Image (cartoon, rainbow, N blue to C red; front, side, top):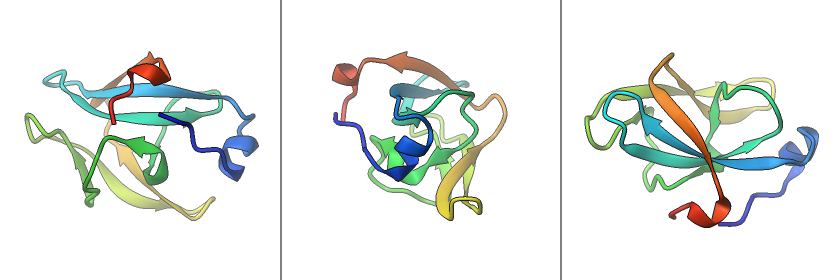
Length: 101
């Protein structure tokens, strides 16, 4: 895996990390995500999600089919993102070599 290097990454300080996002209900891995900059994870930008082949209006778990978040446009940057529901996902920082595409 190689990180996306664009203006959004540079605006957030240039540091990125890979996150493994899993369903809080059934603990199965949903996707991997490139998190840019410090702070908590508030939204998932569609261009930073790795491991989902088909992006739909709702982000859902492939195992238990529970809905984890919904798609919206983040107005400040005019980018599509998923806003996930509170407590729906759990995250873990992983090395970029461990990311399965």
